[in-house]
Amino acid sequence: MRVAVVGATGLVGTKMLQVLAERNFPVSELIPVASAKSVGKEVEFKGTKYKVIGMEEAIAAKPNVALFSAGGSTSTEWAPKFAAAGITVVDNSSAWRMDPKVPLVVPEINADVLTSNDKIIANPNCSTIQMVVALAPLHKAYKAQRIVVSTYQSVTGTGVKAVSQLRGERQKEVAGSEEGYEMAYKYPIDLNVIPQIDVFLDNGYTKEEMKMVNETKKIMRDDSIRVTATTVRIPVMGGHSEAVNIEFEKDFDLAEVRHLLETAPGVVVTDDLPNQHYPMPMDAHEKDEVFVGRIRRDESQPNTLNLWVVSDNLRKGAATNAVQVAEYLAANNLI
Ligand SMILES: NC(=O)c1ccc[n+]([C@@H]2O[C@H](COP(=O)([O-])OP(=O)(O)OC[C@H]3O[C@@H](n4cnc5c(N)ncnc54)[C@H](OP(=O)(O)O)[C@@H]3O)[C@@H](O)[C@H]2O)c1
Image: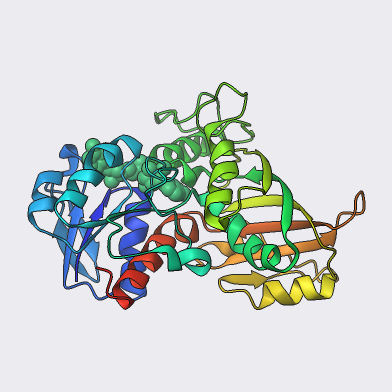
């Protein structure tokens, strides 16, 4: 299968190359693509070096599938051109997620919506993916009515520039380095917490917060779930964490909740209080699963559960989910 990775020099694109190799996706030809400034640079896949090409050339190479992670404006402009050439696009940006004609897919939950007519398929936002993977089995059993989520998101969620900012600030503090670095955020991120991810909207929420609200309903195919989110950037290098409070229609038994999560696809329960074991980003690093712990009843109101949910945002939050979508398409002869 001919596979294009669009944004192959970025954080998500690099992870996609790694995940495609690890999962042994049947790549007969790899087509790495990035912006004009990177054309001619090399990326490595399974020990071989490949030259990065531009967008036009990538379309001409006629890949079966193109995994896009090159930002919203690139996807808005180029995904329809790839699709018109018969290439199936799996897009990591937010450009197409809420388009009613575009499926928004987390394979463990709703891969069944995919058909061979879908030429643009959207990968949800990283913070949404990890929350819905944990939510899905519980929603099925008890019907979620309202979710209150607060996130603790790593700098890798912003891209290479943010990683440089955190590294630069850390070197300055630790080693007094005077080396310059570009600011990805308006404020320092090391030794700080920034309660803004993406731009502010008219309702006072950030775009990231409203992504969690709207994408959750679309993936769960249930507009009645009420969601409110506060999304926060913290000085962690990789892995997003979330405190999730879910009010259900039906009451639940905690042992059964634990069992449902333990047997849910893509979920690992790490919840051993006597030994102080709970999910942390440093343990989720380079793992594909969503880790759930601190499972407890919200004692302030009926039928309500608290969870702590952690996942590697570059993997299940981006690259792994996109590759899983491609695997589903290939396994079902949809590409
Ligand atoms: N980081 C995450 O956890 C995460 C999770 C889910 C989704 N996403 C989404 O994935 C996308 C990429 O994120 P990232 O963190 O990997 O960012 P990044 O590290 O900044 O990488 C951006 C990539 O896009 C390429 N690119 C930029 N403009 C382009 C253009 N006009 N034509 C072709 N390629 C272009 C860049 O190529 P050059 O090197 O040539 O500039 C680079 O390969 C974003 O849409 C982001 O919202 C990220």
